[in-house]
View 1: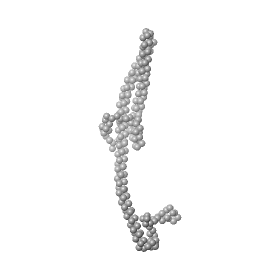
View 2: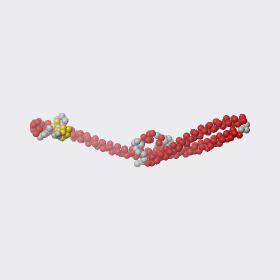
View 3: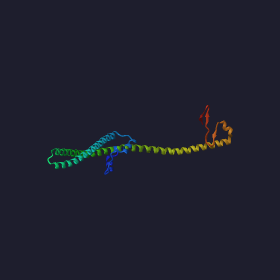
View 4: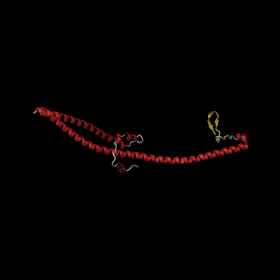
Length: 220
């Protein structure tokens, strides 16, 4: 039986959730149990979102670097234009760099919005994956607990029976020993041998005799 999602929501309130597919311990869980189709689908979706997030962040760094370079080039160009007075060529370069900086700002703004949206999507999918993972693991734990309980009860019963059988064994051995001793004392070894009643008092069970032709096979 799966736990109610609300139970997990209450337990996780105010806590940060790691991105599961990037966590080695999460992958190690599935050396103990199999992924469900739902878990596989969510993990694939989460990986795609994380990969997209990584690409945008890399592109953002490049754009910021380009913007910084363009800004650093405008200052000396402006100084040069002020010294030369009317310098259309320099103004054109400044205008071009200003345009490129504007494009950088637009791309950065778009990237920021997309990253914010991706962050929400990653959290939502990661949360769903966590719930599915906990449900899958809970099912295994629940089944194993029932199995362990059954085995424990069986072992307890067998242990009791084993103790009883040990006592029965000891009683039977003692009975044989006493019978053999009394018979040996009353009838003597010759009579005992006639009835093939060989017995090892030290081992307290009938002596095993090899079968003809095969000394490794024994019968009692």
